[in-house]
Length: 261
Length: 268
Image 1 (cartoon, helix red, strand yellow):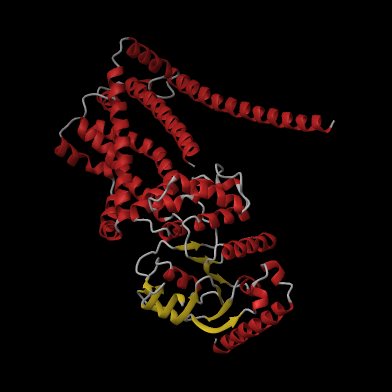
Image 2: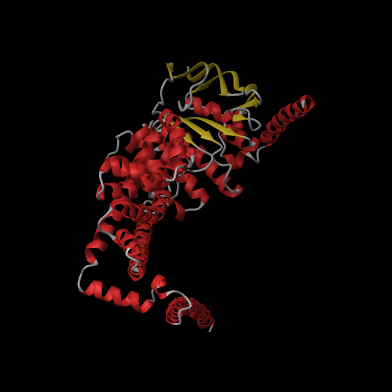
């Protein structure tokens, strides 16, 4: 049974001088516990899809269902992680992490100990009382991950969360996220422009067209790769095969768009 | 051995810093002394008309007698009172209006032309209307101090609210935060440094408002002393008042600066 369904979703951005169509008839469904990636050039409306699923934006046409229920308002069971950590610099790490529960008036002492536990799990045992400025980029993004997980969301939306990090930190964080999501059986949608990351993290990869954004092709990631950690996946023979196929697909798109211009 | 050289370098650096500080201070004092001496000499030798421009010794004499017999205190305290009140009401009022503008985009659009006109208008020109409205007393003077700082505060703070990175709002909205929660958690703390820096600007503006206000209506205060001295041709009194204003304004500015450092340290 489908966990999340997008049914013919379109989105327009209106301005005084006209409108641009950001999304065109997107239909897709995600199973519970599945990890999918949206891969495509910039301007293909990847982030718009996430904002719509998160309920921050309202699509101009179509419906979004989460567990067969319409997403009308921001659903608390969705966690959203952005490209940069956006930790609040005037709050300590623990206060940053507890932001969600406090806003929803669900803060208890248990939440606090759970937060400390999760910080421990992501390898940040002694930072609770520090301020974000004292942490490196990778550490901050891990805090942001904990902030997203603390609400125990059923669905996680990841908007290029690793793209601002250096390569090594990025791979380590991919490993961590993959491991955590598998243990807690989370459903996730990752937006990225990194082919390797998409293959390494997900069960299915959606290739998108730009202007307006639509889904061009879906690739299944072979079962052998799904059970490996992201770092090991990259060494697998089948990884290279899939990488080449996706590369070809994207390349085709790029040369096609060049003809148009 | 290496440790020692590091320490030495650090000491050298510190010494350099102290030396520089001393040089700057020496120059600052030299300019002050030179200016006062020049004023005194020019006045004694009639290079300038001593009746119009007075002289430092006369000003100091006057200040000493006025402070000794206490007749200056009521003027100083009334002006200070008006300035501080105008400053506080102007700052808080400006911030409150900015919050209202932020809360409702429509209100902000509606208010836009009025803000532009009110900002462009020389507020001092409203003096006579204030006097008619509030009567010739403290109220009009405080209103003048208020009116002159409130619009600048509103505009600066409102634009600071709008410059807060929208992604903080996005994070909060993904948790289902309400508008007031977004304001409390992201907008207000992020704009706090900008709000604090308007304090410094407002100190100067409130002084302008209050002194001009006193020119127009009052029977006491430093602004009144200046106008009175001018009318009775007692320029020593005018100069003495100016000296007091300069000192008080500088002290107030320094206090606000202290508050600013303290606030920034304790809120970020």
